[in-house]
Length: 582
Image (tube, rainbow, N blue to C red; front, side, top):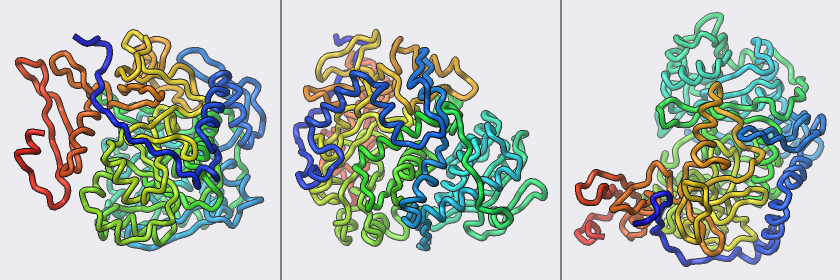
């Protein structure tokens, strides 16, 4: 009988892809030996490593202490004063004021382009709007918007004056908005009349009107006109974005903020049903978000970078807005669905805009596979030089399709592991240095100390499954759950004492590469064998006819649990007895 405190691994993968030599020659980190030296140096003195990264940012006042660690509470760059809006905008004006910050495309097809000079002016204006509406340093502001530049503008305006934002995904209901707004006591909501998704209008303002009926702290609602649809405006509470922006100037100094000043609260699912308000703070978060953006994506000044995530999720915060803008990147942003008006919308966007860095989710990649090769084959994707994945483990067959059909066999893939709670990427290949293997995020980044352990905290052996944990604090880690520090301690620090508990199962192979096996609450126990769902699903998708798969456990009198699988076949394929037996 296997050790019930560990998780068994079923996935085997032997294909290895060295970094392309031409890519490695120009990369920030050019070899695996160089990566190992960086990692060893950072592991020997993590505080010195992160201090070097923090020095790449602008600080109004330098810190006195790099880290104060009183488990489970960390304070990074103690005594330092910084402003994220300044680091994302003002410090670029001397050298790249006329460089494009955002290229935006709406689902109907219209485009807007904002230089760093123009983005800075818009952010300063909206910061003045917020101040005129009574928003003060330390207040909380909710943002419920479509994927338009004004969402990033509102985020950066909040950071400029020291208000914490909570971005709420535009697909959430009035009840979900109400719960989040009340949990953190927002004084203002920024929304839009509506947004577009698959050709239909999502009426966001109407949902906000329903939500605010039970939000006593909300004093004002600012409405951006996106669709032009008729909406109800409540006098004294509701204000049009364009009217307010026309009445203010673009002069607003960035507020020096303590390194540990609250930056944003982002809600994630909880096992009890109540969402958890994950609190991130300023200096440590930006240090790691900026560093990982540059390192993982090998960011160059002429790149066109597209992360397809909605800003309502952590990936959008860290790798659409803060990380790229802190590095002075040109960011592409798209409002709508990948299959509207046709299944080739993403590939058309890449061809027209010469996107060079493309970061998306395995779920999307599996949808692309299902839709068929003919759609990417219609387009010139030669501008791409790097591909990334985020959000869940990517199964090897989807990795291979992405590598061959989208990257043309020449683009390195960075398979990234991280969480809302970690704030930024923790495990990833470095594209010019790390030999990649389909299905693994490879090794932790320099400065990140992780392990795979049993329930009692003992490191497991090579290729043995266990629980993924962090052994040392990192700058962009969550600070607490808003208003519920006991829940923070119980959820992340009590499961395996002395370690941050990620909630994921993992194994580490003979290369030291980490393989994510899925959420530990998704483990299925079959005849005493604890199996991670992610690896079973990956095995199913390896069948040539299967595009997507999901497995669940069901009661079984003999085995305790048996596995039930649900699969979606690739377009035009039909089921067979052979597949059922497989």
